[in-house]
Image (cartoon, rainbow, N blue to C red; front, side, top):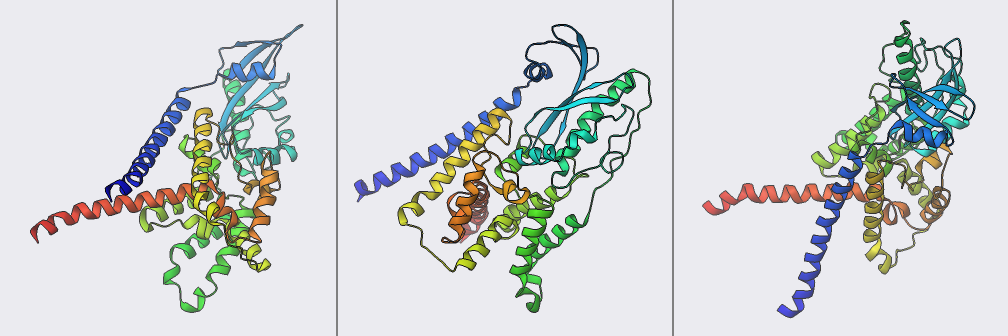
Length: 397
């Protein structure tokens, strides 16, 4: 009997050690990425490959020496939705913004594509350095990428106002107001329905799933376009915290995820708030199919997701770029802007959901696996604490 148990014990020990080593590697990758910094001159060299870049007394000012002339450009960085983005522009003789371009970014690619397709940068062309550069005040915003356009505008304002101060000009500084709209209110209602489902009257509870599904898809998915992903969550782990006054929705959703993990011990996002989950559920119900997952796939699916999640986080932490390994198709589905492998994954996920219940969630979703892992660890810690607290009682008995 002892011999039969040894391989099982050895496997458990090896799995445990591998788990600890994986966590240590992630912490090391995060720290390595945190200690790395890329100066603006490197990005400018990429943008102006044949020019010599010289820093100026202004933090945002750089002299670019080409073959025949020297001209000054201005570059600055600000926080977007999924991470920082930087811009570069020149000024004409009237101190107006000209030749504005996106220099670099680690923001969510789908949102950036959306912003560029709607020609948002042209709305900042011709602005004077003393302008306020505030969305919906003296700059028209666009739909579907609120924090990305705010980040671009903030970066331009930061550099422009530095130049204005250097020239002893008075810049228009507009206070940042709380941008709370109907989508935020509806998402708050959705979260309340999820958290207090048990306290609802029986007559309302029978419509709970339909109401939550419609609000999730219509508001979280399409209107606010705030479906969570590994990229969006890891941006917070990297310290890329957007201004909550500009878009409190992301904090409402993330706060609910944390409450679900720590307080309730549940994955509230995947079961209720995720719009992609509800779309899969509707597709599966529409098809009427219910194919079983083969035992071999079911046995190894969690291991596959674990590896995908670990690789994604390692790449993200090392590069400090949340979008570098984001393969989830949410932004493509809800904003109609996809990049790279998302064009192949979305049709696969939707097609699979017609035959297998929660196809994406059960077999491919790295975010869901990460939240479920956190829930499992919370339960383990609670069990250990309960055991420690009950130990004196057992000794007395």
